[in-house]
Amino acid sequence: MSRGESPSPSPPPPPPPPPRREMELELELEMERERMDDDERPERAEPLSDAERDVVRDTWQRVYESCEDVGVSVLIRFFVNFPSAKQYFSQFQDMDDPEEMERSSQLRHHARRVMNAINTVVENLHDPEKVSSVLSLVGKAHAIKHKVEPMYFKILSGVMLEVLSEDFPEYFTAEVQLVWTKLMGAIYWHVTGAYTEVGWAQVSSSAV
Image (cartoon, rainbow, N blue to C red; front, side, top):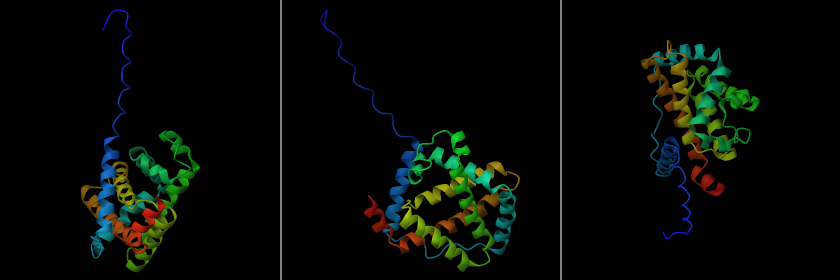
């Protein structure tokens, strides 16, 4: 550079890469879309044994005593770790501060709905048809009305198990977590069945 010349402006810095978990989520969402398109869904959910149902009921009873606070903790971690999930909630879209989320009456209301839905499942584990009916309604509402990617149900299940194992370590031992993982897998199976039933691929593409 000759004397007197102005230095060339530096190129703008490249945008930061998306958070790793968000990148992983996008890959998982795409794989889930392909899986549903390829109709690779298992024939049936793996049923819980009588002993496993007793484990679920016993541990859930401890959790449900503080259902709203637990539900709020789950949703806050869900939205903080996977902020793209907030796109489906106009009330929470602009909330980034966990403390603000915790004070939100709308978030608390949704937390109660999530926990009450799981409570209905747990209370009716002896009645598979009732469980199927309840989760079918949940799945269809989220597919048709809210147009939520079904993969978010699996992610929310994982977040919930994380929170429960941390907040109730004396009850959610490794063995109990395996039983709950099995239950969450069954819930996801029923929900995705409802998505398939209403033709999720068509609903999803028409919403773009």
